[in-house]
Image 1 (cartoon, helix red, strand yellow):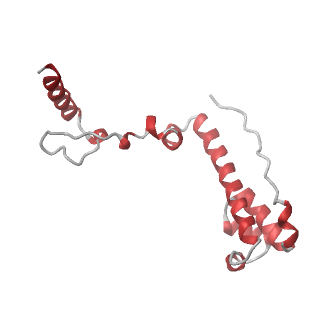
Image 2 (image 1 turned 120 degrees about the horizontal axis):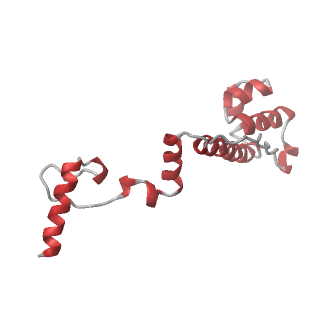
Image 3 (image 1 turned 180 degrees about the vertical axis):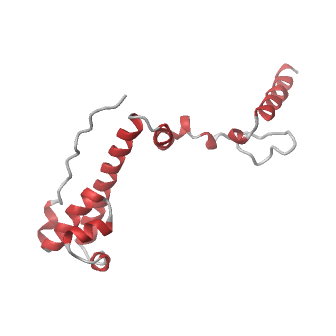
Amino acid sequence: MARKREKKAVSQPSATTQNLTPKQVAFLTAYREFGSVSRAAKAAKITRRTHYDWLEHEPYRSEFLKAREAAAELLLDEAIDRAVDGSDRLLEFLLKGFKPEIFNRQRVEISPSGPGLAGMAIWQWSDEQLEEEIKRCRRIVEG
């Protein structure tokens, strides 16, 4: 079921940008939109090296960290839209991140006793191995 996507608003640099140069503000604005140093540098007409040099100084460093967080939010919104629109693999990945206690089967801890099962996560077991472990547990419970 496809949903109509709305263009997300790109957040602007904060009020502390008054201490930044116009090129720095241009880079940060582009980075918020693209989430890519290369694309933002091209849009701001600077080199990538210039950006990395600026990172050594405040307030640019703090503003860049805010821009990176804004870019991450935009990417997350896009990933969620795509997952809901039909990407099962992407949806699975996002659910594992948001609700690992439910969707990340690697966090299941069990101490298997069967030969060859030690050190394997339960999700790695074959159906036969799972059935054998279930039978073993039933024998223990039923005494």
